[in-house]
Length: 468
Image (cartoon, rainbow, N blue to C red; front, side):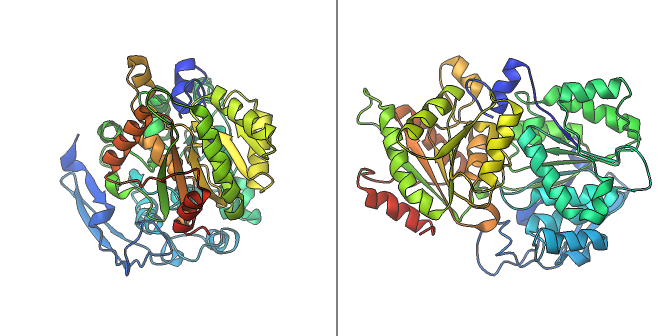
């Protein structure tokens, strides 16, 4: 299992580590869309909300090429899958699952059924995607054989550690000795593979977490392609799984060439927003000519007064310097908070994450380093101090919102169908226009909190989100 982090300046910028920090052969493809499946849902809710899922057996038949037909049946319970007793026990006892979420019910039969076809899978944030590929990886491992048999590539150290924690929970202690995580940047892993220090001939399954970023031009595209190509060649053809909450059309087109004849699960972009997460806009400027960043800080302080009553809060800023300044401002006035961004050393980053996950701190200020995949159930509030922007648009002098990153930020709350609230602080008319572009992209209207200086309005917004 592997973790990858870029070191080149321009790559770190795109992944959330620099200023600004951000993070066809159609006839032979089995196109699989969640909205087309015969899934029974008694009341309308998020597609992947496990609390709302009433899943019946689904038969999905499609032609692969000209000869092969694939038939899959969705799982109503984990016992319907070809999982070991140890994994079933880990799911129920360690992970505290009661049944599969929709993405798990649909994707796991595709992952676990011979001939083990490749899979490109998209599903909502907090829907259990990681558990899907963890189960797929652990199910394919033969403890009697030496060398790596499954590998997961993650864009950040924090995601790799989170993945390892879930793996350890699924592979209960009596079974966990066979699974050894490895943390390597892509260039280091590529060097190890070239030097034959990392044996990949026995790899059966290769996973790319946050695959849209791993395969994007602004992400780790070249490294990911080389790793995928080399491992497939050395292993004689392993199963490839690509998972993410977002896949834009450019990445989708590229994926169709990289993993041909793959099963695919996609969600319409207008259905990606989480219904139990209420989003709000807060205007933090007096007039267009006089934007005032101090107003944003004042709004945050008012939000945090209520936030500490309902759980933990993550505040997203665009730059490292912005994270430092906001941390100093809040700390100076007695707010207990922590700040994390890519410039910190590994030990400090690990300490901050552990304290937040242990509930020792309630407020975490971060760049887009943690926008993707970071899972902390107690996070009920997200504040966008700055909206995410496409880095290339800044160089052109006309900032454009990064809609995919925005969705990932929103997904840090409302995990597994829980309630959550997101406040977007708008410090200028330009930022207001960018949020309007995000609304248009997802076809989702975001209401405004009027007169935020009257704290009753902010309190009502949090109450309306179901948190108070």
